[in-house]
Amino acid sequence: MKGFSMILVYISMTKSILSFMFVLTVGLGSCQTGVKTNINPINNPKKAMETSYNKTDEEWKKELTPEQYRVLRQKGTESPHSSELNDNFEEGTYVCAGCGTELFTSKQKFDGHCGWPSFDNEIGPGDRVKKIKDFSHGMVRTEIVCAKCGGHLGHIFDDGPTQTGQRYCVNGLSLGFKKLEKKDEQKK
Ligand SMILES: [Zn+2]
Image (cartoon, rainbow, N blue to C red; front, side):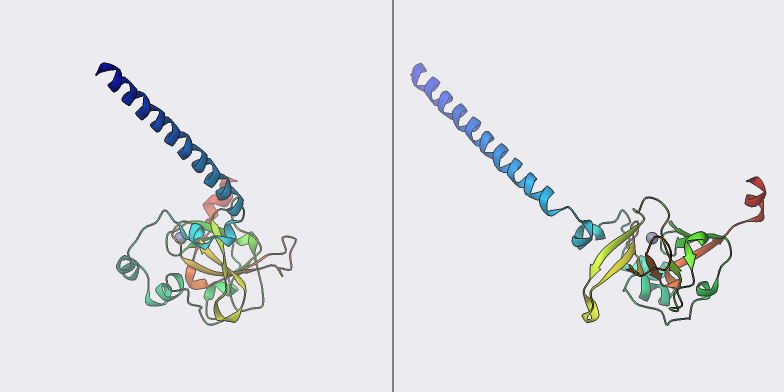
C-alpha cells in the first residue's frame, strides 16, 4: 500500500512540474509578442489613455466650466481666435486646466496664425503630453491629451516653423497661464 501511494505522489509531482514548464513556456512566448507589438505608444490608444487621475464625470462637471468640460472631457474644439491666450506672449508657464500640470512655457509658444495657441515643444522629455492617433472626422491626425488627467488638449502637426518642426495646436480652454512673477526674475 505504501509503495502504491509513493507512486501516486511521484506521478502528481511529475504532472505539476510539467504544467509549470508549460506555463513558463507559454508565458515567455506571450511576453515576447507583447514587446513586439508595443513599440509605438501612439498606436496603442488604450495604453495612452491610462492616467493616474481617476475622476468621475460628475466630479469633472463640478470642477470645470461647461465650455472647459466640452473641450477637455468631450474632445470639443473652441472657435478659432476665441481664446485670450492665443495672443498672450507674456513670460510664464501654461498648465493643464484640468489638473494643473505644467505643460508648456512661453518660450515654446509661437504665433501659428491658426487661431489657437501654438507651441513648438512641451516641458520635459515628452511624457507630459500623450499623443494618440485620431481617425475622427475623416482625417488622420494625432490628438494630444494631458498625460496625467487625460484631458483633451488639441492636435499635434509636423509642419511647425521652428527647429523642432512640431506644432502643438492647443485649445486655450484646456490651458491655464501662470505669469512669471517679477520676484522670480530678480532671484535669477
Ligand atoms: Zn491634466
